[in-house]
Length: 46
Image 1 (cartoon, rainbow, N blue to C red):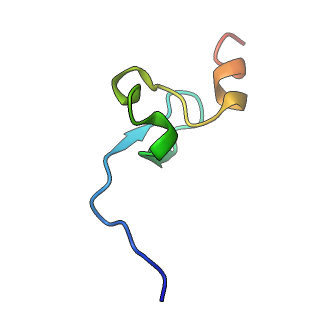
Image 2 (cartoon, rainbow, N blue to C red):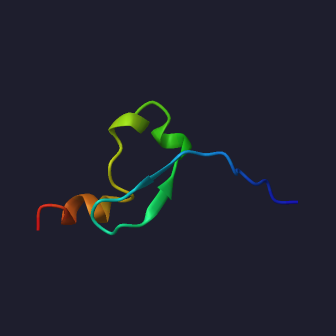
């Protein structure tokens, strides 16, 4: 049976306007996370 995680925080990426949810690797830096991916982070300046 798959484990569901319904109560994770979400943010909206300012580049692609898509919602993205909290990930374990962002645990310590979640307040500073602004982009959903490296690709969006690179495209923000364009």
